[in-house]
Image 1 (cartoon, rainbow, N blue to C red):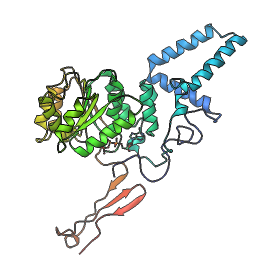
Image 2 (cartoon, helix red, strand yellow; image 1 turned 180 degrees about the horizontal axis):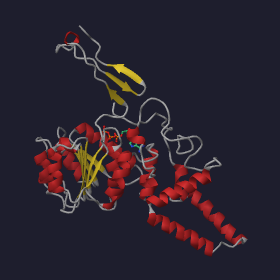
Image 3 (cartoon, rainbow, N blue to C red; image 1 turned 120 degrees about the vertical axis):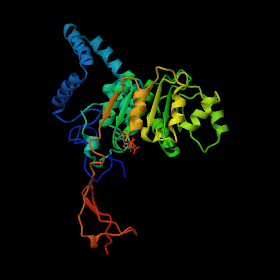
Image 4 (tube, protein in one colour; image 1 turned 120 degrees about the horizontal axis):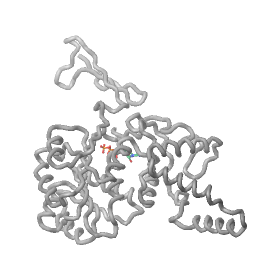
Length: 368
Ligand SMILES: Nc1ncnc2c1ncn2[C@@H]1O[C@H](COP(=O)(O)OP(=O)(O)OP(=O)(O)O)[C@@H](O)[C@H]1O
């Protein structure tokens, strides 16, 4: 199991913060400490976002210099505005209209909880994208998302390493969806993955996060009908998810046009740079504009990844959230045993134990 958002029981956030906490939520807060908490959050936000905080302070100064008269016509006007905003889907009240899934109270390991405290709204994403993110049940970005999203939005190349199940998929899907211009009917993002199963999963995540956007997502992988893919490419496609061989094939035929593709994502980059895929990946890059952005995500950084980075990425931002390979929820033990206690290679290996959550699981128990 590699989902670090799903282990045992307990909450992700301390009480009073976030939807899963004790009383605090997105839509108003009965907690008397809310103002204090809000001030603290504003201070934190100011430290993280000096430019926007300055704009906020300027607005406040302007309001102090130009206090709104306590005259009934002004009050009327304000009330009207508030009332019309409540019925307007583009108003500030949009959060009240979200269809949120039930709160996820499952325990999370440090792999996903050790965040800087950013909010998705800190990234100034499109309203429709934020709606998709919250409706998918994501409350705040995970560490890999906090590192990758703002950098990817600036257009920089990224080489990122993070453990499985820590939210890598959304770490590249969110900036990809944000950057796509839905009025331009060309392929703007390609997400390369090594398997058909991963392509289907990734496109599903893109569709869910982008469900309020008008972004057309297509999946194309080997082992399926080439003719169907050709027919589909005659319709608008903004985001293409697939395996290298099939996308290269379609590009060589001139059916898949990548000259406007400004972003290439390589998920499981270590696998994509295995001898099986690397030649196709390299040929594919030549169908894209020279100033394309490349985001590489990989659980390991073998020489092939470093070599590729040196040749194709421009001043990449390197993110490494893996001080160790093992997820925090798993602890491994080794036991030294006498030769006669050792299990032979007929399936009777040395015994090990793993702790998953609070449980100790011995997973080889057969002895001589
Ligand atoms: N910010 C978030 N808040 C809550 N849940 C999240 C968040 N980001 C991702 N998740 C959920 O965590 C789970 C693991 O995420 P995901 O599959 O993207 O991880 P991954 O690092 O891509 O894993 P893998 O490498 O195994 O594919 C998924 O169920 C996903 O919906």
